[in-house]
Image (tube, rainbow, N blue to C red; front, side):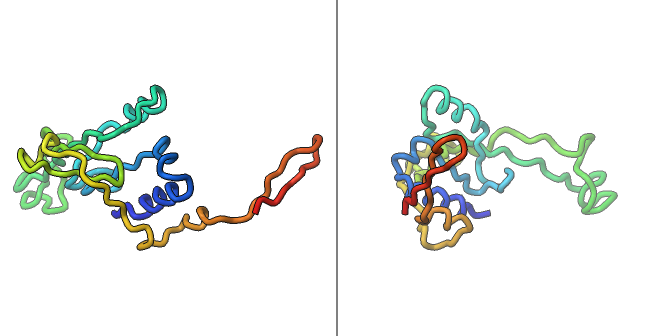
Length: 175
């Protein structure tokens, strides 16, 4: 699933409010290779809550967040209920409870706020976060996609109203 609409929303915020203002309250993290609800070949961030709480409660804005890939349980071959065994390909997973336990992380990475990328330092294990630093900013070209919320970020006339007495508004056109 492509994050195009999220990137375009973020870009629209920056165009409307300015990048410096947006950076005070929004950070976008894109997880390459991770499905919408998790899973996939890429590393996931295990804890979004602690960095967000540190930002809100102590003013510590998040930078790179640690991510890891945990292998998904695998289907057993040739066992009861697994492919090749009784029940055929549509059978269940191996063992009581239905699946083999997942192992330790097989890949770690730092995930940098958009639009920054990861850059391999040229030495070390490519599956280890220590082998990566913050790479260059590579913003997506905003003019490539149209998105549903674009009209909300176009100038439009509106009225500024103030109450004069308990039931009478005084409205001024601001366009």
